[in-house]
Image 1 (tube, rainbow, N blue to C red):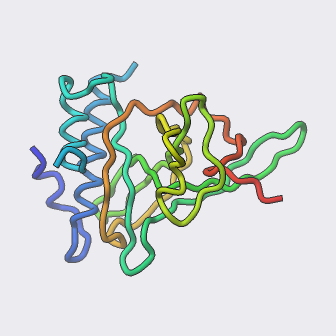
Image 2 (cartoon, rainbow, N blue to C red):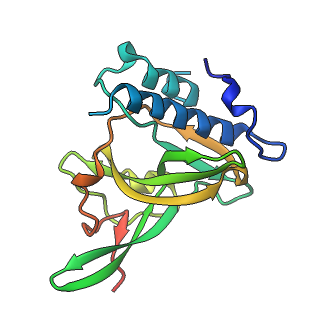
Length: 190
């Protein structure tokens, strides 16, 4: 099941490991979306769990969140972007950063569109300022889910050395995101 033929045409020089894995996650998420539109942890197991209705304890999972690790010594890749938010009558720009992603699509040249996912607490808030390490985004035992942001970045998957997949989740929809909410993933630099 994990060695599907659809990834054989992906072109990522000599190393296709990360690209193929992200492409498989995209295909699995698409299959779940089509079906439901309205080791124990790892990419292979996460894709299998996403596609297996009996393996989903919470049911209806739609996302395999993952972390990318850069080649060389950069460690975890922290995706960053800028979002706009209304504060009264003014439009302000807030920084958004996170090490957690949801794949939207993968092209044959291994360029991928990744959505930034925010770790959120049970109450729906994001933790205080992020950092350079994945664990900085997960303080204590407070993170309960991931918030879809609708904010995407395009990356060259050939430039990553490793990927760590988290267990599949039913991510919170973009419609529930308060993009100016502050916190780790959305920092206002005044």
